[in-house]
Length: 428
Image 1 (tube, rainbow, N blue to C red):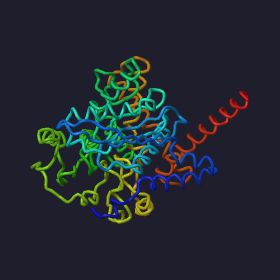
Image 2: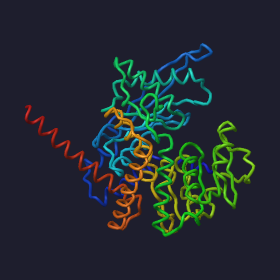
Image 3: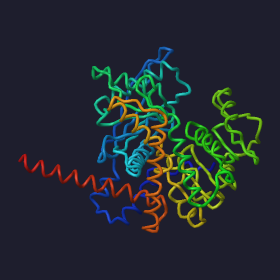
Image 4: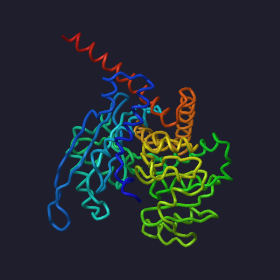
């Protein structure tokens, strides 16, 4: 993969799309600048004692982008590549994602610079608890609600909830989502993002009058999102021609048996490397296969101006956040590639996170059917609204998504500021 792809700035890609939508909406400069910048940008440093007895320092971040629509919401990444620009972009995308789907959350994101694969479970717990303690005045069910992301999962969320509860002297389930079921997690949360991607994919196929049973798909990334996207689409009759993870990219022109691959993956230390019923291809080749649907579900900026012209998929459904850089948008549009943007395509995760948070607040437990039906309804309504807006403004679904999100957040922000000004005036 070229160095140019790696050097793309995800925050700048977000700003590029933001500015196009802001121009269409004629947003004035004060609100435009306010919505571009995070409300809070927090850097924390803390130390833990490793299993070998050596004390090591770690740096972590929490970016609160916007809270106009409600408490901020966003995952926590454990990765050596975590950096402020990435976290700022991801926090902003969470704001727009919640707004597009009508969820009463703002946007946030967090991360710790570390390699979770080299740390023991004890060390990961210490890191999570130290990070939580450093941010105990930032987190809260009505303030900022973390969730799992790259390198984290239900264990980390459980430790975070427990540490936050210890600091505040009582059990507070709603401070975090993505927890294990026995500590207030929700049915359907683990597979929610992948299920949402598959729901959106089927709606996009329908939009282009393509039948699932005659459609093909390639999935880049076989983590939580990619695995479940591939599985749900396989079950709906799509032929999955290719999948990849960090170790290998696999291709089978007759289609890959995804349940069989998942079994192999689970028995092979969470890796698809060496799966026999396929051939190995280069990672970058997967993005350029002739398929009906391409789902980039791995990382940011894998499709840029350097390879966008070579993309042969009819539809790109962004399973990851920011996999298509802003400089590739016009190229793909000119080539009649329909791009379903991340802030719509992968919103299944934050949608079911909201359902989990709501269950915690209401002290309720919903069945899987109830969760899945609400997810289907939310995403279908959001999809239709985005495409209606795209037709109204004669723009791509991505810019339509930004128009919807910016309009909602800007209007709410302005109303809150007027109310605050009025309250302050009355006090004085």
